[in-house]
Structure formats: structure tokens, C-alpha cells
Image (cartoon, rainbow, N blue to C red; front, side, top):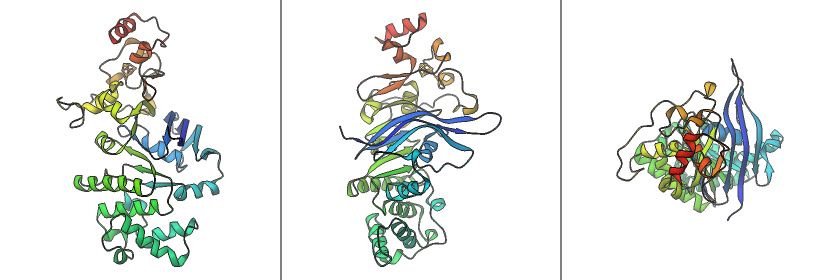
Length: 341
Ligand code: SF4
């Protein structure tokens, strides 16, 4: 099995807001192996983007990291001085955002923005930077790159701007790219082109990719493994094939039932209820108020993690009990797990 390029352990991020702090990322752990695409999926407000910003140490107050480790290339990013962290951003980890217009400088020519990244990280001389910028625009399939290198972001369409953003992220050839909802703001046909481009870039630039999305369809087309987030926690993770064919968490099953083609032959179904308010989470499983398989014990405390296979893990009392590590004498649970066995 390839070694982990990025290891996140127990990452916890809190927003200090009145009347009490909100835990937006709650003890999140995962590995991203070299050369793989890991999808981080969940509804809006599940903590996916805050996880990405925490990894990059780009959180604005009142958000701050209160615990955990983010080990990238054998160094804990949470221990690095800010000057070292600036080198990691761009040269070690590239970032692609949902809204390229917000990430690109509107008054700077796109070629300058790519060149600036190369110059800041000492990856090209001033003379070579323009040539490299044109090569990168060509790599991300911008037609006539030598002519477009002097254009401003507003002179590009949404899809082309996202290509420019990807060129900026790849400029210093980082081994890891974090793409946060890279296709969400785009038309459906353009979405497919950008996903295709990301797959091609992964091969060409030998990348590992952390792909953050609310869309399981995007995961199905692009990722090798997937981690499902709910209310700041990873509730299920495993290979894409296992998660799609054998989902174990009721929330994962709900997400699959709500996408076209997610569950073969089944009618589309929305997950009932609302994404929980992180400021007022229930004391037990955060999904309990929406869960069709809820047990009495689910309201007592958050479930721990259970290994389904070497590769697939889930946080749910149904499986905790089936694995014999629930520590409960709850009769309902025992009856239910009898069914599960
Ligand atoms: S722990 Fe209970 S409430 Fe939570 S997902 Fe599992 S069955 Fe549903």
C-alpha cells in the first residue's frame, strides 16, 4: 500500500463565538496516500471546507485549531513557523477554490499571477516565468495561451477561469492539490470538462488530490477513496467502490439515495430534516434526528469507530454493536444486532 503523503489525526477546529464555542471540525483523522484521490463529501456546513482551511492554516478568527496533527511530507504543519508554512502553500500544497474570481486577483494579468507563484517560490527566473506561464496555460487547455497570457481574469469564462486557477495551483508542481468544490459554480457540461482536466493533471503532474465536494456523483467519477463528513466528523470512509456498493452508515445511504443513479433502480429520496446546527448538537449521534434506523442508545453519546473491513470504517451504533464493542446492555440494540448478524 502506498505511504501516506498527508496524515490528519484528531484535527479539531473551534470557532469562538458567543454564547459558546462551536466545534466545526471534531477530531477528524484520515490519510491521503501518494498518487490517490481522496474525496471528502458531505452537505454544506458539514465541516469539509473548514477541514481544508485548517490543513492549510488559512482560518480567519474566530476560527482556530485546538488540537490534532497534520503531517505532510513527514512534518507536522501545525508546528511550522508561519514563514515555513508560506513555503508549503503553493510549493507543497496547491489550492483550487470553488470561486476562481474570488481567488484570482482581478486587476492582475493571469500570466503575472502564475509567474508570481513561480517567482515567490524561486521556481523560475523572471525571464523564464512568462514562458512557464504560457506552458501551464497550454497544459490546462486554454486555447491560444500565448495570446491569453496577458488577459485579465474577467476576460475568461467561468470554466476557463477555473482552468487558470488550476494552472496557478500547479505552477510550482506541488505533490498535493486540495480542490474545494472545484466544479460547483460551473455549468454541468463545463463541470465534466474540469473533472476531466483534474484527472489528466493528476496523471501528468503526478499529483495526489484531496477533492472536497457535496456531490457524490463527482466522487464516483474522480476519487479512489471517500470520507463522508457529517456535523464536523467523518462518519464513514472507504474505497469508492465499497462505499457505493456497500454503504454502512445511514447518512451515506441517504446521500446515495438522493443522487440520480446512486442506488440502482431506486426512486430519488431527499434526506429528511435539516443539517444540524453545530451550536446545538444532540448529545448522542449527530445524525440521530434524521436517522431512519435510530436506536435508543443513539441518543446517549456519539458512536465510536468500527472497522467493517481493513479499508472501510464507520461511526454508527448498528455496527459498533455488531462488532461487539458497544459495551451496552440495551435490549433493543441486542435485538437489532441479532438481525444484523
Ligand atoms: S448511530 Fe444511531 S442514529 Fe446514528 S446513524 Fe447509526 S443508527 Fe442512526
